[in-house]
Length: 336
Image (cartoon, rainbow, N blue to C red):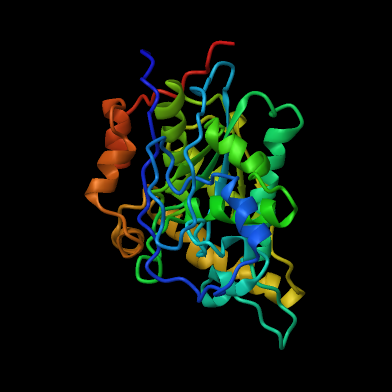
């Protein structure tokens, strides 16, 4: 298989249209410190003009990324949007631990009456687990991390779930005292942390992250770890991976669930079976009426399909379009 030329940049998200009201005054020390972090709103190296707020993100001179020795893929599946933007002068004051800074679905929100916490706390655990996998252990020096999630809440915010997770990771790092963006900024600049900004469901989280790895490095990954909710792990291992012919011994799931009571756990597992797992049993590629409608409501369209498989093999393009044409390029075990 001929190597593919790595992508020069990642797709851009438009700036959020709706944000929570920002504090009007920012302590000079916090604002100045965060300017030095040079957090890119877009994953490219073009000059960024000063925002009207006066919060300027200067251009960094970043050496070309090297993908030599990178063979494994870590996927963090995104489920919501952290809406404060680094383009705001007040960004350092927004905590990712505060529920009000997230666009959450009703079932993801906290319930003070029952003690149920907001699921944004779980999303931060997913992020941290992905980052930690790159920091230590057997996958530390041979992996790429992908945050996967498209612009699924266009009526509320035009930033992708993936980009918002990156912003949440930056906000988390800054709150811990790393005033230059810490490891999050470093990984992003070196393209060890990538943003997959088109996926609208779990099937696309898996497939599009694999394709982004290929477009970035020129090869397909050898091993995959999917970081998601534990109750969703069966979807990836029993349904999504088999239907795209991904070998079962080359994918593993890391499941981290929200804190749940016995009743909440029962309802969650039952709901996942009825509305999460079973629809994919009936429609493995997600092209039927029910699942395709969900995708369209979350922003999926033909232009997105063209972008995620640009420059790739014909059978891969067919798969993205909903047609399984064998053999697929990752079925053959990579040469060690």
